[in-house]
Image (cartoon, rainbow, N blue to C red):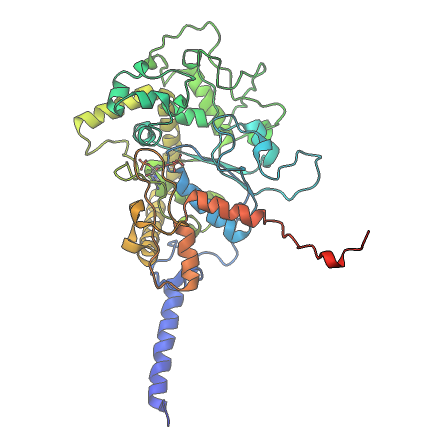
Length: 474
Ligand SMILES: Nc1ncnc2c1ncn2[C@@H]1O[C@H](COP(=O)(O)OS(=O)(=O)O)[C@@H](OP(=O)(O)O)[C@H]1O
């Protein structure tokens, strides 16, 4: 029996060739990773040159700040490192001794120089309180240093919900509004977990605090370097200044005896040399600081700076709390009630150092966007969003983040902490094996992914059972 006549064979061949050609056209680089997906948009408006003009950067230091969208960034670093077989500098558990300053000895498998050869680390990216001197014991000074900031108003909302029972200040106060109405009634510098309640970004960046903000029970913040480094004029000079033995802390705090009132308004953001010094120091250390409110714009700049493809930075939002900011409130506060606007203003005033940090890096981001080109950025952001949407539709039940009650597979259930529910993802059934793997990577929460990388990097020693019968008799 003949199944195919010459006519039907010709038609079939034509159909296959058309599909194949369309896949070539539409698939782009992502097609190779997710063969089940047919994506129409190419990443860039201009085709990529056959020989790239830059080498992808693979030595990275990401300062994972709290409640700022950092888990979404971690997700893409985990995936990139996993795919390329890079070595992560990992903590024993999930953080590097936080809230203490980072110490190199906290890195699994770290051996001090002279302590034997070890393959170098590529990526350092888990929660820490930044401490450059020690970071440079682990990572080369020409690594790409980056971080992320978020509007302190959105961050305060997120932190209040998440750290309600961890920070003594938050625990004592019935609501964020009540807290911000009179923070000093609840907040005691140095009390347990109270770094979560004020200037958390500043704290995470490892910066010193001005005298009136220091704890009365001893300064939890770094002691001042008696010989603070001079910033060279023209920043971006990490390679020149990052001698780990010379640099301890960015700048002196406000000089002793300098009288400052304890009012949060006393640090004038425009003129405070204290703040400006610290920001200039950060500029000299960090190559890029992302802004949560402009997450996708930030990702495009990140991909550009790292010489990565946009497909390397596409991913899903992680660690969002149900009913939370979910993307953060835009700085413009559009659509907020008068009460919400007042709360935001109070949060920014209370977190005045973070606000200065945020304003500074928001400005730098937009200066970079201008350099990159607004319309070029717009099309890259549109492509990134289209790709994310296609991935979400293809990979996820409901195409979006879900309440944890629906997530029964422990590999994908995010760690639940705080007073809100942390959302996560459920994979669609019927995915091909390869898509299960890729979609699984995108959906895996940070703790599970860290465990997976840990197991890959430190495989459990295989214990060979002793065959006593073969042991030589004594
Ligand atoms: N892509 C993107 N853009 C903007 N905002 C984002 C993004 N991804 C996560 N988020 C929000 O960031 C909050 C979680 O931050 P982190 O992951 O840094 O938290 S943690 O410190 O690691 O627990 C959490 O905020 P809340 O939902 O307000 O709590 C997330 O919704």
